Every structure is written in C-alpha cells, then in structure tokens.
Image (cartoon, rainbow, N blue to C red):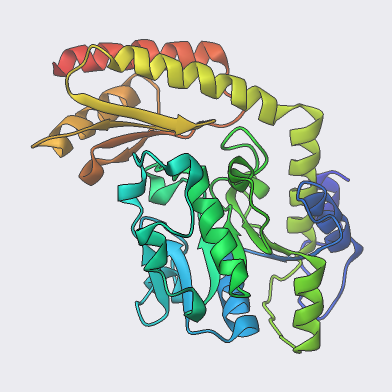
Length: 341
C-alpha cells in the first residue's frame, strides 16, 4: 500500500481501535530481528520507546538499578535521560578501549567485578553512537556485561534509535556484538523522516507483560499511517539493497576521510562503522577549528554534523548517498583543511 493511498483513507485512529496495519508493520519489523515471533508497539519518538523499554525492564525485574555505558545517550526525558545514580550504574569503559585482553574480556576483570550485578535489572545498550561521538566498545566487553546481567536474571534492552536500519552496515548495531536483546527500541530510520518509533520485544517478554497486566497507552499508539511508513521503509531497504550499498559506501568514506586527514596535524582521529563516522580534532581551541570547517563545507554544499565542544565533525549521510557525492565531500574537506592549516 502506498503512503498516498493510506493518507486518503485514515491516518489516525487512537489507541482503543486496532488495525491490521499495525500487525503488518510488526511482522515486517520482527522479520529483521532474531525473534520473529515477538511483539511490537508503535509509538511516535525514539525517546519514548527507549524510556518504555527502561520502565519494562525495571518493572519486570523489580531491581533498583539498570546498567548502561557512561557515554551513552539514551533519551530526551525520563529515567533514561536523567540516569540518576540512584537508578543507574554507569560503566566507564574508557580503560577498556585499548585493553590487551579486550578480545577475551571476562567476569574476572576488576572493572567488571565492581559492577553490582545482583542489584541490576537490565543492561541498556546503545551500540556505539555514544551521543554522536562514535565510541565503539570492545565486543568482548559487551558480551561479558550481557552474560553477567543474564546470570542475575536481568534483561537486555538495546537502543537502536540511531544505529538501526543500516546505519552501521548491518540491520542493527547490536549485531556487531553477537548479543541477544530482549527488547529493541527503534526510531529515526524506521520512519525515514516520519515520526514513528517501535519497541520490539521477544515473545517471552510479551507474555510476562500480559501476565503482570502491564499497561501503556498513548494517543498515537499503532498509528495507521506510521505503521504503513514503517513497513514501506523496511520493504524498500530490502528491495533496493540499501544496507549493502550503505556498507560499501561507508568503507569508501571512512578510508577517504582517513586519507585526507593523514597529513593534517589538526586531525587526531577518524573512526566509525558503516555510515556512522566522525572526524576529531584535539587540543586548545578545537571549537575554533571545527566550526569554520563546518561552515566552509556548508558553503560548498555539504551539510555535515558538528559537535564543537567535542571537536568533532559527524558524517551520518543517508544510505542512498552516491560515491560521486563522497568523492565531492572528500575533495571539499581536503580544501577546507588546507585553508585552516
């Protein structure tokens, strides 16, 4: 069904009226996840589904704390935004990034032993976006945290609002880590600009929520037009093989950025995965370096992300970006870096 057709029929029903369109969208979403027999709830924003996942994990486990990486950005409001230390244990993994034993990380690591897993009801994991700074934690560490949380009967909630739908070169960022989430929060790419989000969960979690009579209601829940948008996006990603295209283009962009930056002293790092890449400058006055770069690229027709306080330019282009566009960006970046030298 086309979006135009659905818009001409009905765009909104309200949470008390069921629609087969929500079921169709759920089937499409679940077909991309490792639990195809699970359940979905469609809402309006990424922050909303992350916070709902957090509250579900808290409610089902009845434990006082949730675990997250210290540099994660999870939501704009609620417990997921505040991450108050009375409700959260924030794991600072900076010392793990270059650990010689990162590949075989275990529960015996002193950093991991310091985590109070007996009081933790869930691990809420954002796979590498890190609030737009692109910090990619070691695979072994994430697997160790998952095992430890599960050993204490906790749940795993993954925030794929930014990293989902091909952003990292795969359907989801958690796939790079070999973990199995109980709940997955989806947004941004799911609607391709339309405000629709989704909380997907395993069949077991859905059954527990029904048994516990856990209720949630919102005016735009399972919105018909949003559900058609979500299904259409997934169908298009598959039909046009956009994830494979994005993964290839991401390699070209990452290699090109590293090549351009190699001879520029101001650039201290280029890192990324798929089409989620940052270029970092360091030292005193990094704001004064990054902001002019951003403006000069914009003058040349290239809109990139900019985090002046962190000294970052962010490259999160659409999956449909062409290699010609990438070449043009790299040429322009080389020119503006020369201007600033």
